[in-house]
Amino acid sequence: MSGRGRRAALPEQGHRRPTVLDTQGMVVEHRDAAGRTRSYDFGQLPVAPELARSWARVFASRCAPGGGWNSAHSSTTSWTILARVAGFLAERGSPPTSSEGLTPVVWNAYRLSRPHTATGLNELAALAAFLRRDPEIPASAREAIRQRMGRLPAKEEAFSPAEFEQIRHTARRMVRAAHLRITHNLQLLEGWRGGAHPDGWAQCQVGEALEALARTGFCPPGPSSRPGRVSGAYARALGGRDGGGDVEAAFSGPRGGRGGSCAAGGRVRLERLHGLGAARAPDRLRARAGRGGGRLPH
Image (tube, rainbow, N blue to C red; front, side, top):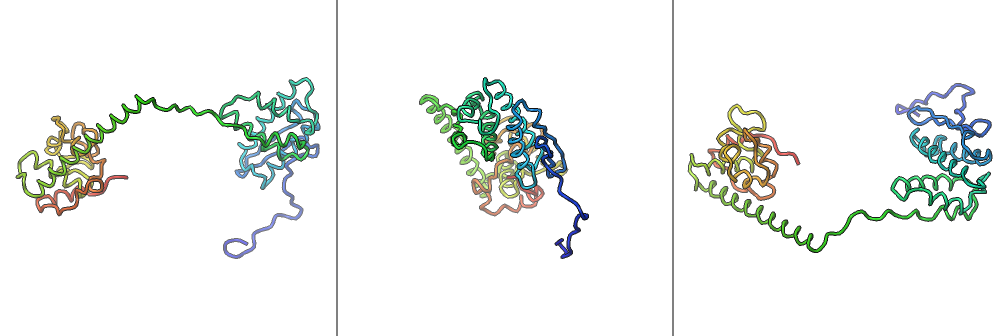
């Protein structure tokens, strides 16, 4: 039934689903969910016809609707693996002529021939999943195929005690420096909110910038500034042009370039991390900070 309750149109009388395996049992045609078609001729593989037909039957069952291979990439990858296995078997002194000849010795020999890499292990896992679907595989070989493929050795190496101690020392130094910066600017902001820094002082401008950032997520813009830019006066007070440590102290991040980009300092949500928005903003800044608008991205 369709979504509106009407019966879906049926195919024309006599319609049959396209066959996947040809009448000779050698050619498999795979039409994936996107309509792409691939044809695989197992008669071209350098193996005995009986073994080729066994593989073709399993391959066709995977390519058929509901078989699990919904894309041409899946069938192409498996075909490449089978072609490699066929070449390996052809080089053996007495290659198997049917699925019954795929003994544990043959499986383990091929397994050892593959590189012990992620690619090699993935290929073996795909081949094992394919062969397990073949009902003619002997029970002893089926048991060998079920065995785990192993794991790759870990590439990471543990830090030496001296290296780990150096990391801890660096981390403590960085955390302490950040703590001192945050504490200094919390005190500066609270002092500015309490009127300790009169208008016109450089520290007053830093306090105004902190207050605006705490409440709006942005530094105070100039009257005609582009979005994300800070007025020259605040940029100089924060060290954006003339140097100084106030930008790093205020924002715990990289210093702004020329023009005092708000993005250089506004990447830290001070109102969340440090509670800078706990007090009410003074009247002299409310309108000015309100023009910043917006919030920082997470």
